[in-house]
Length: 182
Image (tube, rainbow, N blue to C red; front, side, top):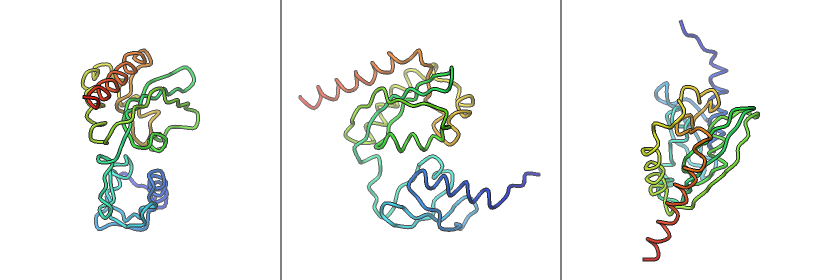
């Protein structure tokens, strides 16, 4: 049997909510949902706990999703003792995204590349194009879950990919600049 302490679960859910700008305010209609308050706008909403864990939600009353706001494609160098890796992703707030990964305090993080993109939708598209191109080079997400304890265990690459991924982001930036000039 799999028993879990209700107090421990509640505290874990509170921590996960705080990491993504929410406050846990109560239980939801289903066991996998809880009621949360958005710290920024103050609205309240029932959200699936798994969506909170990975930052995959938005305020339905404000409705301006991260896909419509300006965003960034980023490449971060992460390391713990003698193991280093790269994390490719997109976000409108890279430092907040780093918090969502659940990295230990013993893990160093340095943003190597950051490219401003008009919308999250476009940033996601560009990031996805890079991911498809190098999917066979990714580090195994099961291994990376040892370091990214909350989210972000996918789209991790070996440190040897640093120049390749950096060049891909630079190439996207040049293409965006050229298309905006024409």
